[in-house]
Image 1 (tube, rainbow, N blue to C red):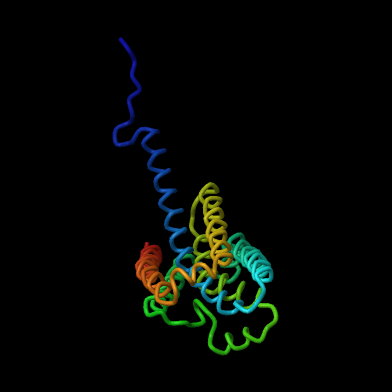
Image 2 (cartoon, rainbow, N blue to C red):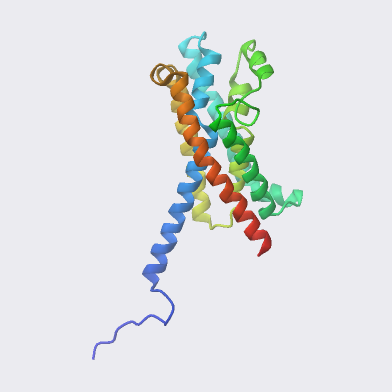
Length: 230
């Protein structure tokens, strides 16, 4: 008689558990990618970059784009790596931060839906005036707050504070680098993007992203409330 490996009652086979874990991991990474892509908004950043640097030589524009993305990457990666430790030092629980982060991202989504510029996703009017008179916009306002702004920092901290294993965290770090790479490409192609989309096209894309971000922000709040009541 041939012996067959029989799974325990009520316990799925190892292959099914592995597939379920893989699918869950991919869902987490996909969600992180969508949130971070919407918050950083490479198309919107490219539009503002074009406005601030359109009078500069093309060579200077490229150098500014590379330096700003490198600085923003350093800021966001540091926040990603020390996110858990930072929250622990401040005595902030993960559920509380998820609720606060969800509220902040929801406010950001409202600005995107109504195509409003605020300090959450862009520079204020006074900051724009100051930036126009700066010889170098690499650090301010391009790296911060346009790329590594409050919304992006909040999203990165939410990603870092999620209770996942090392493989998922490495995947999230890859997602972060991928989004920043797309941002760099958008900055390098800023003039072409503006000729193709114009102001109206940029606002349409921003509104669509804002609707998605609103739903994701509400989910963050619900997850935080559920965890705090558990």
